[in-house]
Length: 155
Image 1 (cartoon, rainbow, N blue to C red):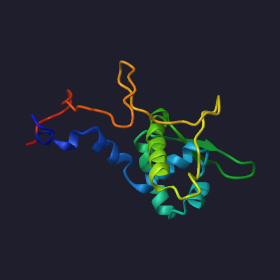
Image 2: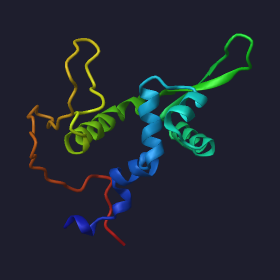
Image 3: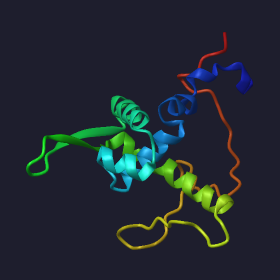
Image 4: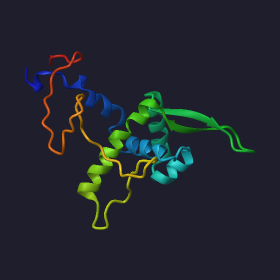
């Protein structure tokens, strides 16, 4: 059956976008991944309205992408900071893919505003597609989409 014969709501892309498919959610994940973990720091760095940030943090925490971790500065009340959970860390590949695409197609004449490097060796990091047999699919991959066990025909 053609792809259009299947229900698009069961698609894993659609389900992922329901969690992280807006600007602020992705930028919160980016900042937390880069060590900006406290509410006030996130609000300041992102320039986002506090109510919007609060809602995104709540949603990302409820979805299991962020962990809310208590901390207390000396002489201050207990507060929370945010850290990527295991599933949140897995989204790093998406963030790097967005960055790479943006660098390639949207960076100005000065070049990319940031470069991601492997912390151990210092080499730049790139996202690549590879099949389970280890074949690098290159810049123009030939892909075939097949229905999986969780697909369902459109009603």
